[in-house]
Length: 288
Ligand SMILES: *[C@@H]1O[C@H](CO)[C@@H](O)[C@H](O)[C@H]1NC(C)=O
Ligand SMILES: *[C@@H]1O[C@H](CO)[C@@H](O)[C@H](O)[C@H]1NC(C)=O
Image (cartoon, rainbow, N blue to C red; front, side):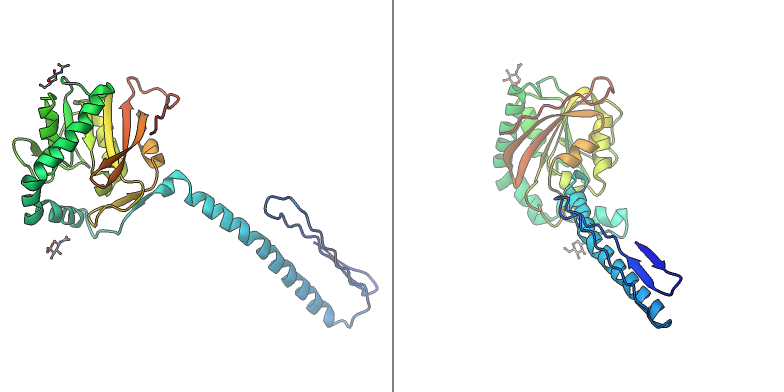
């Protein structure tokens, strides 16, 4: 924008203005020139009028761009993981989680009517993982957030005898006490880790970091997650794609992603911890 006031008191104002319309690249150039003898007092008025017009047009052209940037960042993978309502403290979060685990009605259901059906379904999942070479009888296996231990019972039933579960409330002999944000195990302990409680993690990157710490190099982690709908009121996060998982599993490669029907969880995601901490390999993703 150029403003020129001639020595005769004429005011000439040129306004160059470019609008980039929706990627089409159309440029609009507007030129306004006032060249007339104006009363002295009117000059600042006219000048400010054009300045305001320029600012308004500038803002109008910027707004859609801002919107575009915002919607782009929403669709990036980090936006595909949202942490739910804030808890006043970590203890308040644990108390809320315990409310589900210790619910007498649920406990009764889990250990009676629910037991056989769940053990059967988990056995099918684990047998399938065995067939795909991701689990074997000699694997040292961990189930994270195992509640009353159906996954562990299933693992032992199909021959993975060295298997254990952790949960906030112990359930001997299948489940020992442990918080998935700080697993009670040394580094590189397990060959295989399974969890269907990722949605309960208040700190998802800690949840993943602990898995990568306790897995042996070459070890396998299988997660059942929901990508399409919220799970329950005890969920602490919502996941909308595997992108955030791939970002958080820094020391592992994504091996598989497939649709499953796992008690309200629709996707099975498999990671393998790298043998050496090299850069990520080209990822191979199988879907069905
Ligand atoms: C746990 O449940 C009880 C009743 O069922 C409720 O009064 C309490 O507020 C709950 N606590 C949390 C932390 O959600
Ligand atoms: C694994 O254990 C199961 C159950 O004990 C057994 O039937 C199966 O043959 C074993 N598999 C191998 C490869 O040893």
